[in-house]
Image (cartoon, rainbow, N blue to C red; front, top):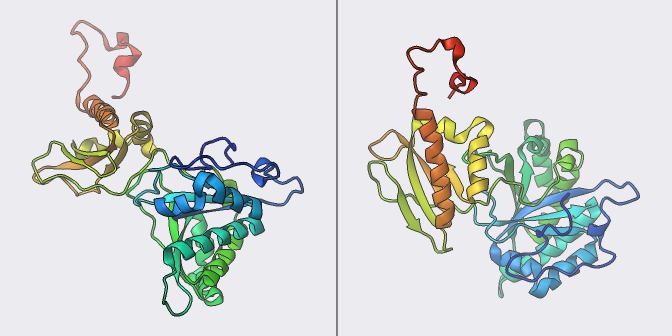
Length: 334
């Protein structure tokens, strides 16, 4: 659990939400030993603004009424591969469900309900669930998810794991239906997740990823390597480098360590094309960096340094030097 002053409880475009003296976020975990849980889901920038409200009044009201804590990722901190922000609600199961129902009711009335429509409006919610916890929702042979669909009347789908983003271990569980169906389906899913010890222990900030991601950017014109730049409407830039396939490993690093470090230090978002997806006419993989011009310059310099260190052999020792006299640095693996 992050601290209440982490900056995630409000958005950059609105004033911070007021904190009530009796608010649950100042006393989690509860003193009576009741297990706390959480739920994360996606919202567009417009929906996030509606949840926060003018001066943070709406989010403060929802937190006071439900006694749950509601946090949002910062503006432009999007779930990988989307242009949607992350909302996290935490508290006891009942508190979380009450807060989620308040949020969904407001969003459905403002963004989905239309005058003249017959019947209840339908909407969708995309829950963020750790990949390791999805098996419990699916059940043996899909038995659990089928029972959730039958009991709630909602349509529930689980996305395949996305391997395009380093360090992403979450999947999206999309729930579609009326407000009542959504609430019932989320109720069933959350109770199942709350039985998973790993899920309960994985609670953290609403945006746990190494660096902010944006929606996938378009590559520049086809050409023989080099880099291509494309200005985007959100005032960020996109540059694609060509890196030899044999050197991609040193850019990524073991377990994605190098590319995560480059993203954190530079502030750029970095995506590497799949194996076999080369820049036209070359054997170079596409390494796309998105962010400010300064962030891209720093990321590019760090990437090229990694590539240079991998492609430049160490200098040979002097002819009159015995190998036993070589320093540790000269003997290290490059």
